Image (tube, rainbow, N blue to C red; front, side):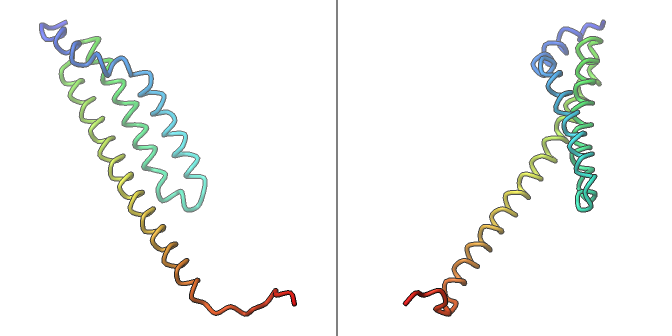
Length: 126
């Protein structure tokens, strides 16, 4: 162990405590990506959750190396992979919000337009 090992361990410890969850979520993302790939349309986007799962799993492995060996480079790798994960998740969330708002606007607009259609008067009981 190097002199910086206690320092590295102190910095990495909060995330190291969640390494089990990182691995678990990584595996879930990979499984979700594989299931998504089973559909025709899903083939286009299945690589994203798989990539995100791999990033989380690699983050956990790099955290283990950082804490056990006091490896500063491993800690930097873990932080870089976690940063990439959050950037991807942020972009996907933003895209999802924009698509949702557009769909809601389109639905509202179509609903308002349908109110102005002439009625046939069918179904009236006299």
